[in-house]
Structures are given as structure tokens and as C-alpha cells.
Length: 196
Image (tube, rainbow, N blue to C red; front, side, top):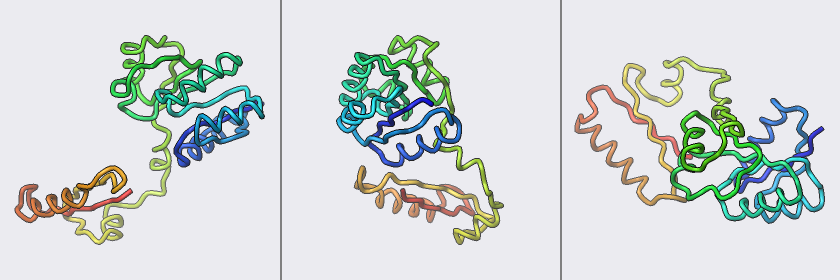
């Protein structure tokens, strides 16, 4: 059994990774879930894991944790968990033992911009979205009925990012409805707003 610690500052990220490891890597036993690099350092000191999963490879805290784990000869796996991490989030300063990227583009950016050896990168797809493809699924008519929309219409789905990151969500929603009322999107259009 491989004893592992998960490090992510987002609880749903810790939960998702734990679920995926349980389902696809039964040989990995998650012995702790840490919401910060500081908590992970405390946990590693106490639990002596074989492996550490890092979700924020470009963050200062996790870079320091990665450096410390390397000194202690603890294996590390880093996840590239967002499309803009490799090109918009500064320079990768230290390499983990393995990196999980969710597509070939991210893999190629790691190789080109950060000189990461191809052989340490695993392209996984985006496992956070697997649940959406497992079903159960509903028909288009059933879905439109559930959201109280006309099934003969085309549907514009708008997913604002929420008040934590933006103050313009309602302005965008008003604009979408205004333009739809003016016919800018064509005829027979319904708008569906999905808040996080």
C-alpha cells in the first residue's frame, strides 16, 4: 500500500482527488487531506507518507513543500488543474517526480515553456468532469421542461463566476436579456443562467 497525502486549498479538489484515487488507484491509501502547504508539512512530519499530491504547483507554499519533500526523498505528483497555469502563472521553479496534465496542449506548454521532460508528464483528461458523462442523462425535452424553457428554442447558457470574483454578473445577465429582447441572437432563443 502506498501512503499518500493530498494538498489543495480547495476542499472540493481534495474530495475529488480522493474519490478518483479510491476508484482508479486502490493501491494508494490517502492518509491525510491538507488544505494548505503548512498543514501538509505538519502532516508529513507526523505520518511519513510515500507520496504527496500537490494541486497548486505554481504556488509559493507548495513550491516550498515540494523542495522539502525532495530533500526527504518523498515522491511527489503535481496536478496542473487549470488551463492557464502553464502560461499565465509565472515560471515552474521546481519539478515534481510526475505531473498530471489534462490535455496535450498543457503537456506541450510544460515542455516548451518550462523544460519539463515529456516522460514525467501524464495526460489524464479532466477527471473532475467524468461525473457529467456517467449519467443518468435526460432527453432535451425533459431538460427543457425541468428548466421551464420552450424545447423548440435554442438555448444560451450563461455561467457567471459569482460575487467572489466579479461585480458585473448582473450587468452581463441584463445585457443578455436586453440583446435577446432586441433579437440580436435570432428568433426562438431562451437564456439559462447557472450560478456556481
